[in-house]
Length: 282
Image (cartoon, rainbow, N blue to C red; front, side, top):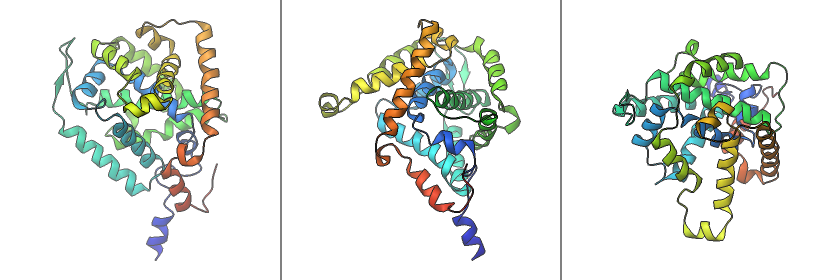
C-alpha cells in the first residue's frame, strides 16, 4: 500500500514547487515553441537532420502534438513516465542513419551530443526568454533556477548534466562559443518559408483565421529572436523591434489566457495536480 500511495503522489522530475512547472505550463509556451524552432534552424547540421528525418510538413499537426506531449510528459509526468519517454526518444535518435549536410559536406548524427545540446539550450532559453518578455513573473534567482532544473530534461535525451549550461550567464557563453558554426542554410530558408504558410485543410484555410494567425505567430517568433539570430535571417535589428515584439507577446499571452482551459490547458498539468494533491505549490 505504501508503494501505491508513493506512486500516486510522485511529483515527477520537477514537482509543483519548481520554476519549470510554472514556466512550461504558461500560455507563452505557444509562442516560445515557434521561437525555439526558428532559432534551432540556424544550426545547419541540426536543420539537415530535421529535414532528412522528418515528415513535418506532411504531418505538421501530428508532429506538434508529439512535441507538446514530450514537453508535457517530461514536465508533469511521473518519474517513470518521463524516464520512459526519454528511453523512447534516445532509441529513435540512435536508430536514425548518419547524414551529410549538403552545403558543407559535413557528416552528422542526430544523437551527436553537440547537436542535442544546441536543441536543448535553444529550447530552454526560448521558453525562459519568451515567458519573461510576455509578462511572466520571475522572482530573484528564478531564471537561473529554471535553467538548472531543465538540465534534468537534458539527461533524458542523453546529455551529461555537467555539459549543459546551468545559468543564464552560461547560456550566453555557450551562444558565443557556437555562433561561428551558425548560418541560414538553403534548407533552412526553404523550410522557414514553408513554416510561414504550412499545408492546411481547405476548410481551415478558408473558414477560419488559422492561416493568418499562424503566420503572425511565426513572424512574432522571428521578431523575438536574439539580434544576432535575426541578422542570420536577414531581418532588421532596431531598438524598436525588441520593444514591439515584447508588447505583442504580452498581448498574445493575455489573449490565450482568456481562452477556456480546455483549449489552452495542458492535460498533463491537470493530471499532475491531481496526482500531487497536497504537495507544496510555488
